[in-house]
Image 1 (spheres, rainbow, N blue to C red):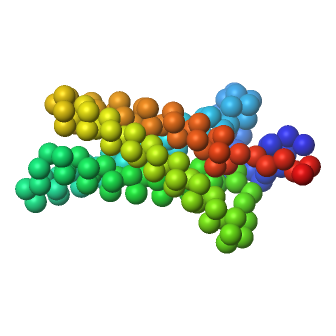
Image 2 (tube, rainbow, N blue to C red):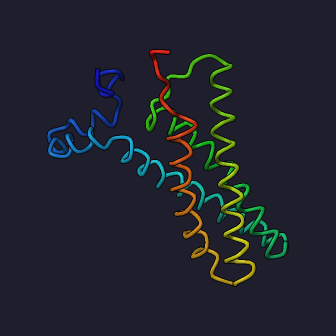
Length: 168
């Protein structure tokens, strides 16, 4: 059975099946995982940027120094973005079949662990670009997010949501 036949059609399948988008449907079904990852990656980035902007403003208003502003706003945006990403990746991108508290907990630990690694990558880029080299905060943030987006896909695809061999 193909991947499309194994899962129930969701809202995205129904949208591309509408007459206006039907021309796009074969391409969508063939490249669904990557397209969905990019779509939700953009939304995750929006969650990250909004929460980073709000927390940066609040930290600066509280009179915190540059390094504290960078670290605190990055951590807050990370928590919000990773939680959003886990839910959307699990349901729509990788169509996780993990069930039960133990399986779900293991999947979450793996997901958050991978994202924790990329948090440190992002914090390192922010420290290097914004704190040390004095590159504009948002330019550094955009560059860091591109690097993190790529790393997160690789970690999710190869480790977290790796399809289990059903013959074992």
